[in-house]
Amino acid sequence: MQELLNIAINAGATNVGIAKVADMKFSSEFRTACAQNVCGKYGTCWMCPPDVGDIDDMIAEAKRYESIMVFQSIAQLEDSFDFEGMEDAAMKHNKITFTIAEKIRNTASSSTLGKALLTGGQMPLILGAGACHICNRCTKLDNIPCAHPKKAIPSLEVYGIAVSELAAVSGMKYINGVNTVTYFGGVMY
Image (cartoon, one colour):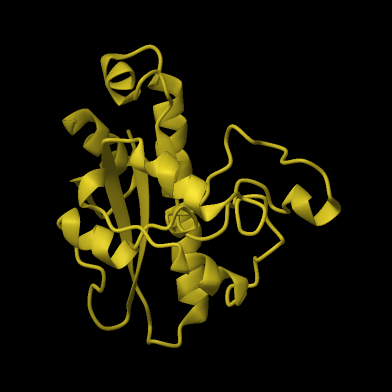
């Protein structure tokens, strides 16, 4: 799996680790938090609730995988109110996630790594941080089906994954110091 870890590091991830899905904690409570619409994406993105799918079905889907490669990006902020810095770090993390996804999708059926990642012939599940950012404007806002359903990237949380605990089981810190922001993503295989 070193080749998989290298894909994430070469894409710009700060840290990477591997965890067993059986060691992960899942909770449907994340949907309650989503419904409160703190991030402003509830009902505005196909990869966010309520449109992304039933939480119990999604947890069951995630549990069909054996392992997850977890990657994180850590960014320094000017201070704890540096929202512009947080947004910039989120955009950089999304680019890392897109790069990892593209590399994995391009090698999934043709390389030794790609074949190793397939779970019962199923493509790896690529998860990011927050709402999907493949499109500048989600087609959900215009009541049009997802423009890129094979490229869209849901979040770890939308699958009920407790990211703070995922960090621990993958050997990473969830909080990485004063005036930093940390984003996570994963590849389930």
